[in-house]
Amino acid sequence: MIKLTKLRGDTFYLNAELIESIEEISDTIITLTGDKKVRVKETSKEVVRKVIKYKRQIHSCNLEVK
Image (cartoon, rainbow, N blue to C red; front, side, top):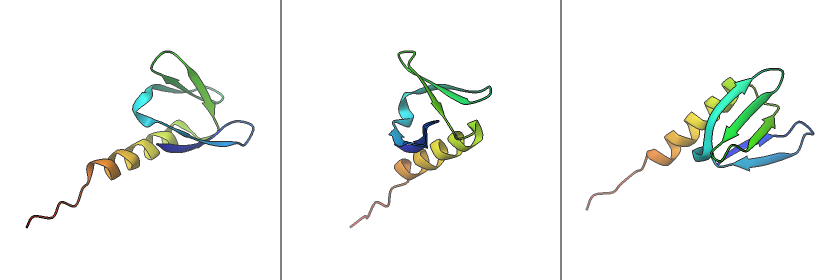
């Protein structure tokens, strides 16, 4: 999940796995699977950065071998 900001200023968490595309016109519009669209204050670059950080966190695991 990534933390984003709606245009009105409310923050929310979005499941990054559901993102299908990101467009930056005047606002940043995220299209989710199922064609739902979400407008956010963050730039497309910021959203991509957050998704990459999220994916790195979930894919890096510290396995302990005994």
